[in-house]
Length: 554
Image (tube, rainbow, N blue to C red; front, side):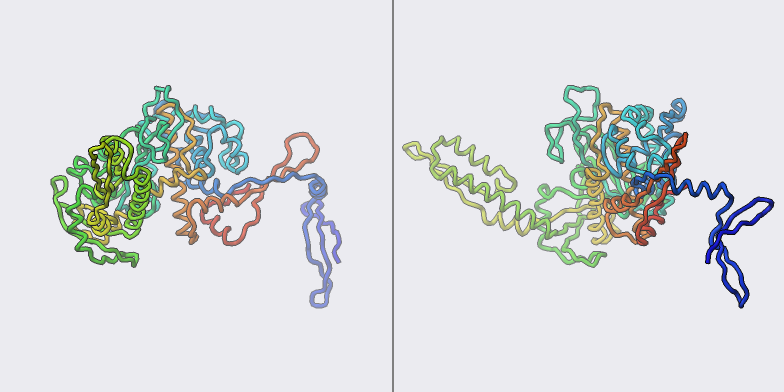
């Protein structure tokens, strides 16, 4: 039976709960709980009587990303880079680097405007991690902090960060994927101050808005972004590649001790004659429409090529003089591409046939008007050589139309053109399979752009900035946030065996929550606040510990 017992130690009275029992037939006691002094017992009683308010915030994702940023001293790198401009500016308790890191974490977890940052931050553990008050971080706070970052320092900050990531992760950089995209903005046409936003062909279909271009280089194996450049929205891919190539290749060579092992992989949009002249260590594609004779030869000699994945493709290999240099040429057949092109041709043919039926064989129009309409109908891709027509006019002036399709041309397209992709490289020592796999790895850059346009994670929009300097800093924060997320996903896969994508990883980590317990005693002064991590399952707990997603509760 339990009982309360008083005892003294060093002249101080303490209390404890004990219970009696017999040991070897002799009575003895065991201590159930030490209650301490009288004051301690009173305090314990008062705590039990005090009401407690409980709320919870998301902690896992922001803690993991914050830990990564601290591991690579991201805020410190930014602050040290801009310090020569007159010292590090501190606003609302945060340096410029810390403010940018907070914005990067927000961009990775929940893309939104700077004005909406405070509302989001209040629902997370980030203010406790970084030591700021959420309501203090207004849009003006971020604009003031971003304004302190010179554009010409961004490349050096990015280079230093990527170099450290390559060293810590022990990356073996070999094949690098290069690609470009654009992002539309809502900057008014009457605002002539920024030069980056310009009108051009928008890949998201918003041709009515001004846009900015983004060039990105990623490592094919890890999909980690290595370097980027923001440029004018009206600049073509070919001009962008030419301006981007020399400085970027120099920066990329500094990332590895074996620069000759680096191979740049890019698509046909940048492979002009001028860009390929003098270029070394690359894999790219050529436009099939400019090399029909080569496709005629290659289509008859396609042979099976086994890939490292166990799959098999049909390909042909040879050599040709490209841009004044003899290069290795690989023509590879893609059933998926062939199927898509055949389907697109069938849709174009069906649409043209409907228009021809509406026109009729005896249209009530002039001879020249009939020819113009027929040429417009044949203006779709491949139809100019596939659809043939003859227009006559009889003695009464009636127009008569005869239309037919070139069956031989259709067979040529289906058997010796569709589904074929031309690849070239100066890596003569590579096998055909290596060349094909290197080019297919270029999709890593395309995947990065899909993430950077994902409205649920990492999206570059919204970007409510109206000067070139702010737009450059905004793009830097978006790409750096993508680097942190990609690195976090890589570690989750390697250390915890995680198999989901990065979007799912962030969502699962965000479900790890911290409870805020506020004790209301009725006394003067601030109430006591305690934090406690909610219970999580064992599997998620192991992954969270590996990624540092469990905040240190003090």
